Length: 318
Image (cartoon, rainbow, N blue to C red):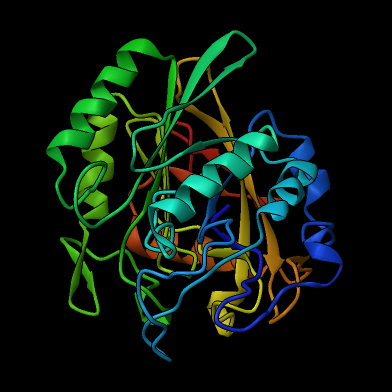
């Protein structure tokens, strides 16, 4: 899934009731069925008092979630959280270190721009999860040489390499995958298409992007799946959930032991302000991502079937 921000107590308290324990109630059964459940944790779990910047209405937001909320992630069924994003350092190095401690204390793995690799052994398959973002190095897709070298090294050590990338333009005007470097508020946000392709060429097996705050297209490249944005998923009160920003896809992916895409599905959830994600009987996230995939990557062999199932078109079949 995409961005997670479980409520913030800065600059004013906007936290869910019951300590956020019910925030993932509707999605927990899905997560517990997965071998590996991954989300992008946008904002630190900390109690630090000094922010690294000041909020600016409409342009700059800061998040701070109590460290105890790490237990909510564990109870919901998460395996790994990625911390490479533009809110991880809202409360500086002390804030992100407190986040690492909170996640570790809850028994959760994580990966950030600092260089951690989350490691799993799933059915005898060695799996690595690496988080990347934009901004300065390291692990910045704006400066791709270093992360591409790291991906190649990881591919030599692990059977499956999963990338979680926070990048791309933002907002409802950024639904389509744009060729070339994307920008937001005059800040370079990387060339997602080129980086994803280069990463797969060097051995990455699954690319999961987020950051635009809206869902985007899927592409199959060299039998590897790329999700160009999984949008928002559980952003309690801190991020706009109007229109497509409130469509919350849960992407299920099945990979072979060598990392190639076998199939998957999209379960559609929806967010409203000050609520957790809820199943969407109208399937808005699925319908949007199916349309965007056809429009942005018309030659991709992905087939969207009944019930949100995703498969690969067999050669010679319509």
